[in-house]
Image 1 (cartoon, helix red, strand yellow):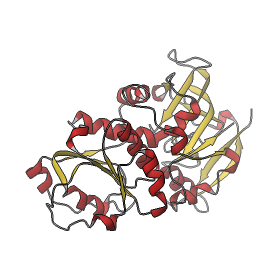
Image 2 (image 1 turned 30 degrees about the vertical axis):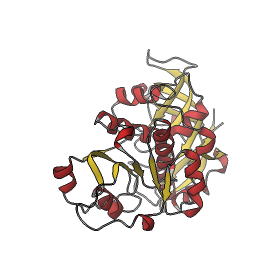
Image 3 (image 1 turned 30 degrees about the horizontal axis):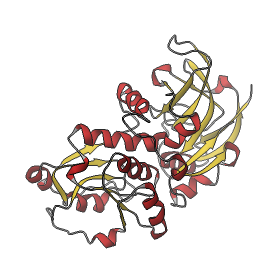
Length: 327
């Protein structure tokens, strides 16, 4: 049963190829899945293009997300025909990933798909939407509420940022979408952003403790922007730290934490505990509203068309989400 996969090789340099494989060549695991949809995340693009050290071994199929149907399983928790989702947990990093027509995954990492959305919609959500939901969850567990004031979202036109804006808006929060691209203003407003600004328009202070303006922050870029925005967070606000598109460096002081009670919350979708991961996926359409799928979807492509999109995503040529129809 040969099938198509986007496989990443190490030699002569890290690169990807579309190859035909047999199920016996996949990473060993107890459940075989026919992959209906996957997606391209920033991490996938770094892995497949060789522009980031993502994969733990080679060769390996890329793709940290998948939604599909169980073909066979040695686990009594799943049976043939079950609709399942996998995101993170080492998929497409430590073992063969979802950018393929079939994948083998340990049943401990599988979640049954909720009835409220389709496999296609699950991959529009993907790791990006899940990460945004996890950030909001962490902030709300720590006391964040809409009446505290506006939440800033950096890197707002990317996958995580788009979902954060959309989900926060649906939950009643005011949001300030921060973007470097003037062309994204209408898109972000349509997702529900209360305001859209560039970094220059904010005129952020260099003071370690500046005027308190924002009730919270979901940050996708790190670096100097995160450092400066932390100094503007209101009393008992929360900062959810997700990405490093600008820089992995954080040159800040403890003053916002010790004088205003600001909390810096790390958000790691890859190794989120399975009970919480499953809880959040099941909550879409319930405690967590369903996103505006059609607004956030940038493009749907076939697995055979995937190659150019890795560099395009890294080079910021797409907003929102890119999903892949693997069949």
